[in-house]
Image 1: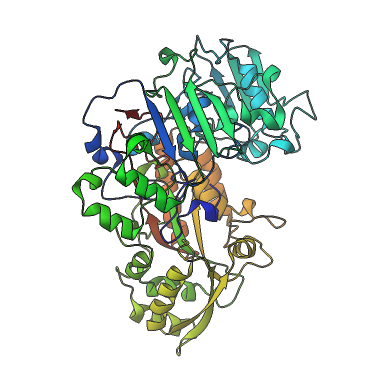
Image 2: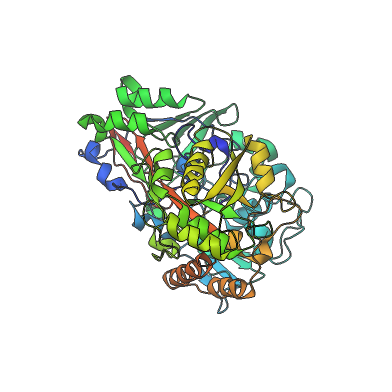
Length: 572
């Protein structure tokens, strides 16, 4: 996943939103299932579920949504070829069939993937869902007018690099074949064993060409899921969903669709969201949030109240906050300098700067601490919880800096941001003990993002973070360490500008593997190999804790999204 925008982070706390749907995460003291004490009664159908969010569900068009995240709201309306397993914790990292009969049938070299649709699939108007509709939405996702979606298919599909969508080129993509209404075949440029994971994204939802209204489609999309859009005000600020009468649970074993209505209200101050969920008065008893995280102060208050503590869900999402180095900038071209910094880091003070161990877990691996990513425990520069300044000084001497050195750390100036001044100051103090004087270069958020993602302006030493679009090492290690993904004319995320043929070749080799468990083992080994080069210093994996209303039942939080899954929730 792209580095999260500021709006998906809780000011004064940690990453939220898109990542939890988006943000960040790792292992917490409780799983989603641990937070089910408020769900002791059997869930049943009926009622209205209220979703109280800070961020609007913008661009509610399957071609424009980056993932099916957004607190899972899009997946209530848009079904896709495959989807994530709707289960707690690690079980929720599995990919399962949705519109398709299976996770796809690959060719021997994984360059061709074939899917067949289930029987009985219908839109909200009762018309049949066809593979031509899925092909059409994928083609729509290439249209400049509908930008914003995930970019993978432009790189993966044969001949798709310059395609501009069906409005300009109605001939469509020849790399996608639909020999009949229930079969769809994808032809790829290279082996992609993780194609079933990509097929969970909303660009794989069906859109009937006859109902396409272009940039206005988000206002009244045609539903293939259990709910239809009744209204969409101010580009996702207020969305109301009602049951789709032509959705059938017989074709969908993932979405429970308990409530009759789902009312998504956005633009609410995060403190107000916490207050309303805590009080649970009236409609707020039937409310949840998918983008507002509890901060240290709120969490302390909640923890001291048993009734509130029983209504806190903990999310796990693949995200890592880390120190990034640009080895083209001195003195970071010297591996021993980078290693010295790795030893000098005090992860305890960093974690405390971000709200403490309940909201963050110290990290020594770049990959998140979940098996689906290929997590393999390792620590190439073991410095303990508080750092090893003596070892750092020893390495500095070997690097030619017996009297220490002075470096500049670039960070986001926004207080509370994951790459903000609190973390920067904690690192400054820790490195000082090791004889490293750190000057802080605080940048306004947009300027900071522009600076660190441009190869011509990228500093040598800065704070960064990364989350994956699906639970695998591929979208985690590839954009950060694959030399062929270095971008010189746009946003670059390979900050170390690493272009190691052995790393590139191993990425290619793993991408050929269609057994995701076997691939995970290889991703873990590659993570360890890269980690030993000290191109980054992993700092922590954020943990998400969120309140839900007192009458909410059936709380499910998977390690895929880390967000309470609204497709599973029931109200009293």
